[in-house]
Image 1 (cartoon, one colour):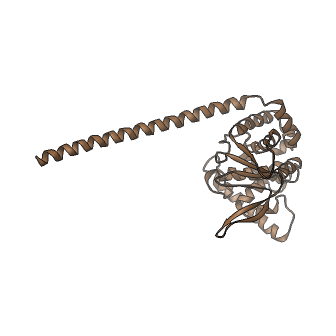
Image 2 (spheres, rainbow, N blue to C red):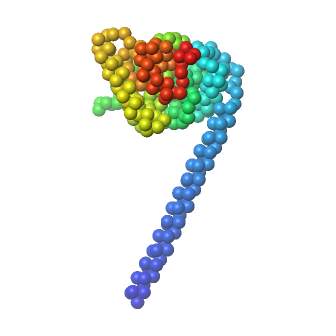
Image 3 (cartoon, rainbow, N blue to C red):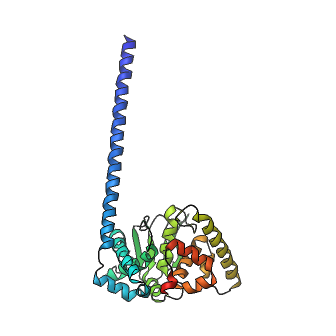
Length: 287
């Protein structure tokens, strides 16, 4: 009798386990289906926005506020306009310290950020959801063992798992001077590219595994050269802030690549070629 009851209990438990497994499989398939559908909808929406003509008002802002946009070939202009359409449909802007958020602010920032996405497959800064904008340089607060305290005065910052923060006067100042190799939007959004793999190490996700060895060799050598020159106070194509860390070196190199391409190609040709291969752009052609 006890043996029969035991067998029945075991059989019932096996049926329960099968039902649980069935439910789990159904839930997994449902979630997977929803994720696939969401990706398909997002992909279709992006294709539509890429092909959609930019409004005349937005184009006027790009033309007025981003002199580098004026130099782009027509094909790259059209690409950039489509990328901006996607960017502004997916990212959120918030004003801080009394900064008003309007189309002027959003399009000016998006137009510069999306220059880093031209001519290549992109995930549209997938870790980024919000851009915070201050009217001018701001004091970043830091969390210590004693609580939050005021830290450094900054023009911008990029958080590895969070937002980008920008000072509006630095955004416009960097955009207007296209020859100084300093652009806060290029700088902070190149950090976003660098951080896509989860590490801020100066090595973004490259086209193939074979690219990493050359990238590391070239950028490491130029990083060390910049460190030596910075210590001696020597003038260089790259801003000396790039000597503070590999991640900063990549960001500073990106700024110079887009704003001082002729100088970089002449004085640091190997670095220029690495960035040209990564960004799929040759700014010398439209400098």
